[in-house]
Amino acid sequence: MAITLTENAAKHVLNFIAKRGKGAGLRIGVRTSGCSGMAYKLEFADEIGSDDIQFDSNGVKVLVDPKSLPYIDGMELDYVREGLNEGFKFNNPNVKDTCGCGESFKV
Image 1 (cartoon, helix red, strand yellow):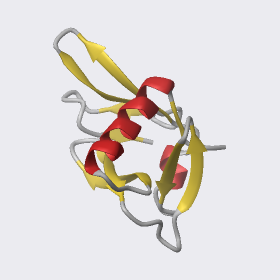
Image 2 (cartoon, helix red, strand yellow; image 1 turned 120 degrees about the horizontal axis):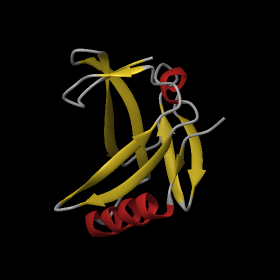
Image 3 (cartoon, rainbow, N blue to C red; image 1 turned 90 degrees about the vertical axis):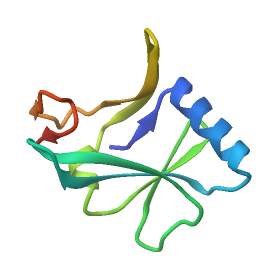
Image 4 (cartoon, rainbow, N blue to C red; image 1 turned 180 degrees about the vertical axis):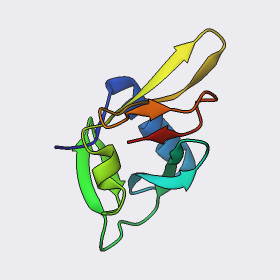
């Protein structure tokens, strides 16, 4: 499987990297947090780590550490506007339950 970005998410990431003036790609992972146990973490990567697993999606290099991959494999990252709010939306087929506040998830 793979981690993919929608066209909207890829445009947002590529624009942000261009504004920064540097960047190798987008690093996606999970961390222990919240009521349900896990939360997503996103950061712009300036370097590709030796243990990073790489996916290319709509012109963006997506980097994932091996420990996070089982929890997010098959996920699609979207960038959406809902009313006055905008941000990334994680469409993860592995999620079994989410926290009421929307901060964390369980697989």
